[in-house]
Image (cartoon, rainbow, N blue to C red; front, side, top):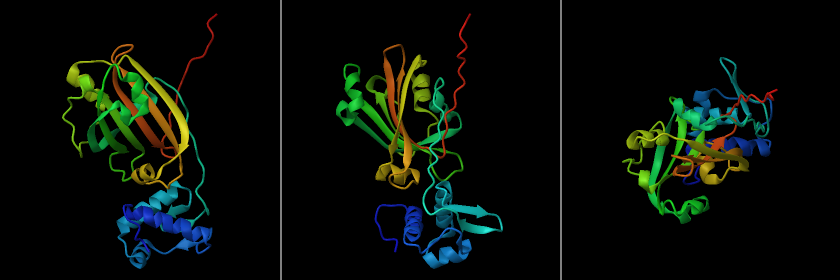
Length: 246
């Protein structure tokens, strides 16, 4: 049943439950068997089943209760796109409580990302770091990112498996710099299959796509970030004084 290649097993379990809901094999109000029994019937470990249950609960499909079992509460994922925009640094501040887990480090040219073309006069070669950001102790990441570091600031000795808190903090420390300007933008989109797998989402889920340009001075770029957030696990809040002076 779970023979689709190149996909985490727990995500296949998620897909299986969603399929059974669409074909009425499962219905709202049904209670699933106890974890040990259900995992054995599927031929998977309890830890894998728990990851699947966690994702289904985030999607609003399941509700787990201590000593109350696992109940199906919705036949389809619940849309909960919720994000408050704004604030200085805003989502960049998540680096204080999380870590970035690097899955790829590669030197690329401006053609790798069309957003880099406007910076071609500043850097022809970029250090591209791909990875996910997660809270310590949580199995599912909430941000997928590709970070492009300008060539003049790319001597960071990064490798796959490293878990830096913040690349811009590494750059500031290595080169004795301070950020002076951050330009950010956001958009809503549907998640692609590759990013959905990285974040433990279902392909086509609503996500927040964000980009950020971090500058040493007003116009000297340090790095460019392209990130995708699981919108159900992340919020940005701003507190802006809009009082008109008299």
